Length: 195
Image (cartoon, rainbow, N blue to C red):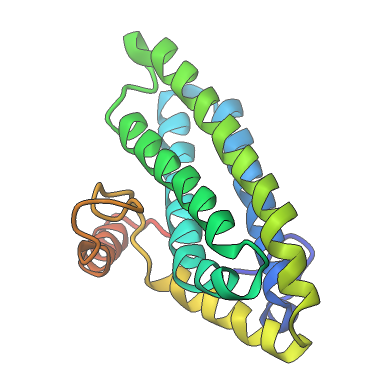
């Protein structure tokens, strides 16, 4: 998925830090889209797109980026533990929001919960950009970073598109993630949805 102003070929050659920064910007744009959406159906559709992007992105970070950071970044265990806790809270908030009515009588509660989610997500992105990304750039060669970006894109393409309690870091059954991804992608294809 090439970003605005980025050709598919250029995206294939970008390094992992550029890719992750672009994903963070895309997530910010999806938050804006939910807030700006007109009508109940538009808001629901915008929220579903946000959920798919955040879930795929966080899954890829958990599978590719965090394992590297644990060993390659000074204090990596603590840094990754803090990011995983933020991701757990994000996943739980997404689960709560999915069960809420984003329109009608439930809209006020949805708006409050959504604003809290955005704060957590933005703080999480800033922490990754400050503590994980600079060592990724400084401690590896460009070809390795491009290979890592390819691994992130592959993990995103195979990730669940909805949060599940088991898929939330620290969830009860981490093995449910791959099965959930298959179910999600089949359901999304049937409804014509995608990232």
